[in-house]
Image 1: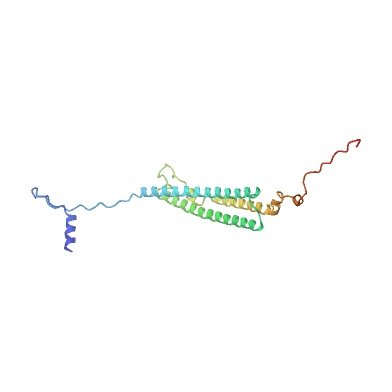
Image 2 (image 1 turned 135 degrees about the horizontal axis):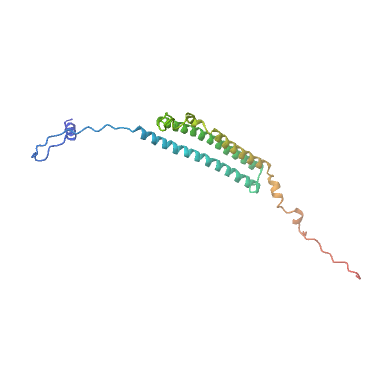
Length: 216
């Protein structure tokens, strides 16, 4: 315990000058200044973070729509070109894949839209705390933002519906193409050889007979 007390006095006091010629006495250290928080800077940083997060959410929504439409378009091209042998089980497997991708895309779109609304609400709260809606805080004779802008978190709901409609239309179109595609037996029949041509001794070339000339 005595060692800790000596260490405390050594840290809290300035030691005397070596040799004691100047007669310097121990001076207690000054207490550290209290930590001051600049709330305006904190609000600005929070606003920047939420703005970047909102841009990231909208970018992910656009990528989702492009990926889903690209996958479904590739499926339509493959089925129409006959690159896939559509047996009954293969047809069922493709329909299951379409349903799974459609459900995933719709669920992802809904979650991102809910997150988008929450981030927009946080942006409005930051703007309110910074005084953007206060009368004559930044502009003479009015506020910087109108009161109607506080409903920013609830705006843009039509975009969520539009994305869902695009995904559903693409999924229904691919499903119809899969169901209307000819079966595997019809696809392979056009390239098959007639059974009579494979018999031994038979020829698919026409028989050429000599002409009946006069005088014979």
